[in-house]
Image (tube, rainbow, N blue to C red):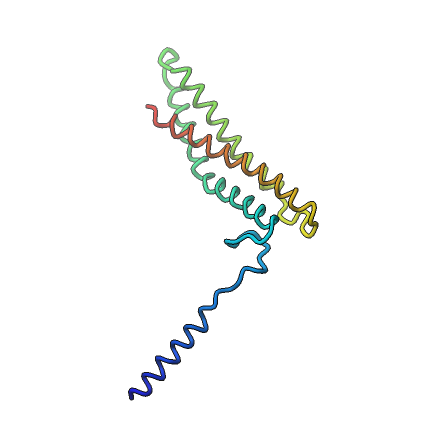
Length: 156
């Protein structure tokens, strides 16, 4: 009986050791792994990271637009003498900034071509570098507008 248990334990250990081989990343070319292998790979990863950060905030951005609209509507129902014109202007301006940030991300996604210049060594890094700049601007626009919205929406 002990021999069978020992044999079972030995087989289990061998199988566990055999299955723990981690796949190598040597052939990685898609920008989604952890370790970039080329400049193109690093740039693609940076572009996708900028996209992911910006897109993660889009739901919150749209919610803020709705909250700002509600505040504008509430202020609009007050008598003209009681309306805070500066606050109303700030709400309107910020709502426009949030909408522009949302549109910026949508436009970038429509125009981005993941396979553009693939296989063309001199052009692919240039394309990805320009897309990295674009998506970083859009991401920063989203994050900046949300920071301003957080501040403005805290006001009574």
